Length: 315
Image: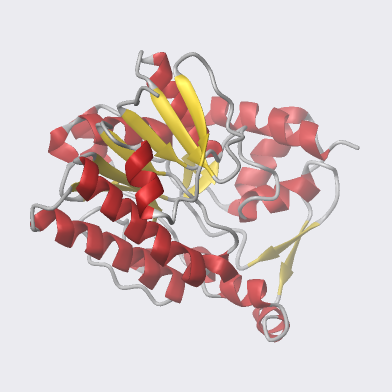
């Protein structure tokens, strides 16, 4: 079997968008998923494999120029079990094949902040999920600095976009109710400004990082539009498709914390709500200036996202 210069682990919204972008640029692409069910084309090959198996990853990625980590292993409650072996296998595969390792990550590692985040801001996580992602980058950076691999990382805020499942992420979960004309129970203050990152902007950033050696050895933030509160984002989504004005009910923090005693996922959500307790802003101007990537036009993004999400919530 011939090998592709671009190997993508994960076929969620980001991995699928990245595969389409690379294939559209004339690149050959392999997408690895556990089921092998990612859609294939003449330029995209889908392969079933366990991404936590370093030998399997190394075998598939032989001859690859870039390995992209776009995996999202299960729910928050499974991260501590699933991420470490997968991250270790990706490092091993990158070292064995000589491929650049490009990791899709998030902003959890910065912890609570009071100013717009930049890529070079120190990582100070307050939640175990942020600590886990910070360690993954520390390990990759150490391997890069030791000359064992070439590595970089893209960090994005909460996703928005038409390909995002309606039950994935807090905004999409809220919209699942509001676009259907139902009240939504929201966590934290819905009127605090928050950065949202378009899925295609994440993919475009990953593609740039994998093919430009200026990116290697450090992290980069994905360009995002100016912050918009949860309430305003839901209102704009509703307006775009003629849905009723969103009705929001804020879940008291004490009630969420009480529920987290018996529902582990609620405990994981509670650990990240600091992102909605104060303005959550991103300064990705360095990425924009270096690679020429600009965030998606907000009004168009809202319109396409609202139409796609509404179609999925209609009975």
